[in-house]
Image (cartoon, rainbow, N blue to C red; front, side):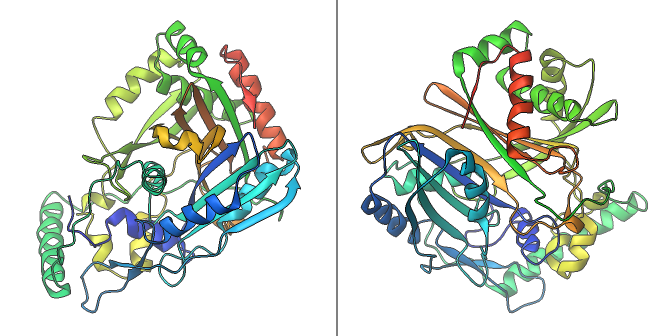
Amino acid sequence: MRPTGRLSVVDEIFLRTHRGLGTPIALQGLWRTAERIDPALLHEVHAVLRTGPLGRRVVRPRVPGARRSWQPNTRAYPLVFTDQPLSTAALMAWADAQGADLDPEFGPGWRLAATALDDGGSLVSLTCSHSLADGRALALAVDDALGGGSLTASSSAVFESDWADARSQWSIVLRGTARALRRGIPDQPHQAMGREAVPARSLTHGAILQCAIADWDRAAAAQNGTANSLFIALIANMLWASGFQRETIDASLPVDTRDEPRVDNDLSMTDITIDRTDTPSTIRAKSRAAYERRMSSPGGMPEQLLQVIPDRWAYALSKGAGERDILCSNIGTLPDTLRTLGPHRCLGVAARAIHPGLTAARLPRTRLSGYLCRIGDDYILSLVSLDPSAIESSTALADLAQKAMLTAGLPARTW
C-alpha cells in the first residue's frame, strides 16, 4: 500500500484529464427512490460527505520528482435540490449534466444533487472526479456517509517529506529504466485507434437497465458462463448490433486491486479480444486468463516515470494505453446501506462513469462502456455510448440494450 497522502500513478492519469490531457471522466452514483426524498436528509448526507474521504484536494509538491499529495478540503458545491418534477424521459439527460466543473485541485471535486420525478419518486446523484475515487470507492464513500462503517480507518501519521519522496521516486525510475534499456529499446506504448469526425451534437448517451439476479444467473449458467462473462458478452454484442464492422472486439477490463476497503483509485487494467463466435463460456476462460496479467507501464518502463516527468510528456507516453473498443467494469456488490436513503426505499442504485466537457476532438477509442453492479435482488447495468454516429440518443441505446438482453433471455426494465 502506498504512503498515506500521495497520489498514485492512476490518480494522476485521471487528474491530467481535467487539464484537457485525455478523455474527461467523472464517477457517478444514482439512487432512484419510490417517494419524494426529504431535503433535510440530503443536507445531512452532504454535510457528512464534506468531511469524509471525498473532502480533499490535490496539492502540488515543492520538489521536482515528488508526488502530488492530498490535503483535506471541506469546500463543496451546495446541495442542488429541484422540487419541480422532472419527466422520467429526461432522467438520463439530467444525470449526465451533474458532472460539470468538478476540479480535484482548485475547486470542489464532488457534487450532490437531487430532483423530483414525475412518477412520484426522486433521483439523487453523487458525482466526483475520477482522481478522487473509482467506482468501488465511490460506493464505499457513500456507505461511510450513511453510517455503514466499512472503511478502513485512515492513518493520521505524517507521510514522508517531498525531498524523501523525490529521492525514492527518482531511485525507482532510474533503476527501472536502466533494467528496461538493458532488454533493448522499449516498444512504443499501445495507441488508441483514430476516430472518424462526428457532428457537433451530444457526443455521449446513457441508459440504465435493471434485471433480477435470479434471471441473470440463470441465463449465465445456461451458457456455462458467469455473471461477469455474460455481462462482457452483452456489451460486445451491443456494439456489433450498433453497426461495428470489425470481426473482433477488444475489451478493456478494470480489476479491483484493494486489499482492504478504502476510498481510492485502487485498480489496474487487463484486456481480452472477443470474436463473433465467442459465448459467455469462452469469454469466461479468456477473462480468467486475462486477470492473471495486467497492462504494463509504457514501453516496459517503471510506471513511476509518469510522475516525475512533465504532464504533457506523461500524457504522450500513456495516451490511449487503457482504451479498447469497449469497457466492461464490474463494480461488484454494493453495500446494503445504499438500498435506502433514510426512510426512503430505493427502487434501484446505479454506478457509472460520465464524460463532462467531452469534445469531438477528444473522443476516445472506446465506443461503448458498461458498468455492472449488484444490490438487493437486482443487477443494475449502466451503459454509456461514446459513438454518436452509431447511437443517436439515450432511447436508441436503451432499445439496443433491451434487444440484446432479450436475446440472452434477460427480462429487464429501463430506468
